[in-house]
Image (tube, rainbow, N blue to C red; front, side, top):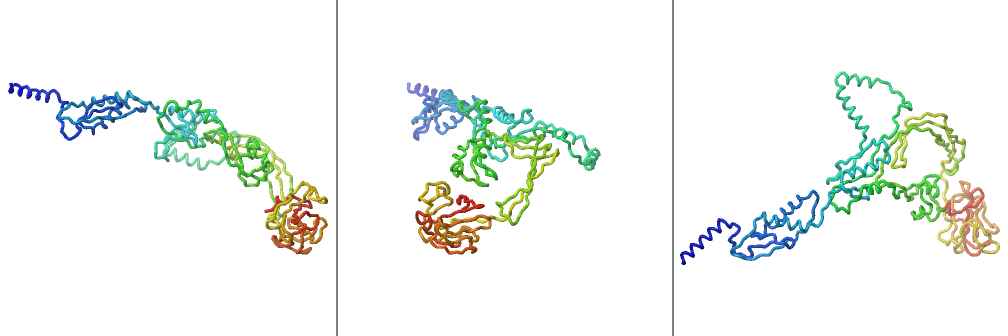
Length: 517
């Protein structure tokens, strides 16, 4: 019986060696057989847990290959180890297949291959390159009714990453390039030499109006467009018609407007088609509609502009009345604020062919190619001064403004209700300085002014300093800007120690604050 038992045991080992290859003898050095779970599902038994990541990668590749889009799935991988002397492990392909089924059952979502379009700060997600091109073509179509231009996507050579940008093609230019290339191929040898000779000796002939090819000459996008491939969910994609509306519809965008000669706040508001109160609200430097603006000041305005701007050049014929440029005659004895019209202008009439450039609907430049004068314009001739006019400074240091220029409630019974200067309250004896270089024409008592000083200046203006306690200059004396001419006081019709200051132009008082630096 012992012999028979031994024979049966040996036979069983032989059968196991040949017919049960998945049963292996395992080394006894800790956990040596592992039951693997993926997303809570048992996917197999492994003898070497180091191979589990390779199997998961293979299963993921198999899942990705089952769809044309990007697939996201949960992959919670765990295992339990045990130490055995004898055990059965699963085939690698079986484990990969089980992992595939576990992943397939836990797919979170499928992401669509799509395209993100970025224009400045604006972005939109579209389903295909065809939709991207349709969006771009919609912007072009607003200005190209004849469908002569079309957009294409090309690799952005300035970017290291895979970013596409736009290129606008002209169908006419392509046809001309192809015709020119064909002409070059046929015009060789003696023909090419003769063509070159005749081209050199052919006289230049001035074009007639009918010789110009009027219409759209150039068109391109005015903003940089970046297009990148992305994978997104359905709800993240924008329908094409909505994207076209967003990109082509005019939006209110802020721009800087530089004030030019002759501008007023109301004119600037009207020119930029915005309400005056909104213009004031957008600019902290403007207090109200009467605020002073100067040439060169920069104001914030809003202009209607689409997300994707289009720049184009059109060649056009038109007839118009025109004004000749003003002719200036310089007078070195006059100040720059002195002018005199020597000849009144008269408009002329002309026929014109010009290249006019636009950004969207706003003209940015105009180049006249041909001009024919029907009758000439008469220019305006203006004599103007070249001398820089003198400046005016506050006549005292410090002081508190106690009365401004213009209408007021009379401070005392004999005082006027219309104040013809400005007052600064200041202690008696404060130094009073000449506001500008000039000649003293009066220095002494002046009835309601008390002690007073009058100074005439080179630009024809006059300054007056009243209610003084002491006069330090004499009539006929020349004084310089900032020179001490008197001491402040409380003489004449006065309600307290102060300095009264006036500026007169052609004998009439004006608001000094309009002229003080």
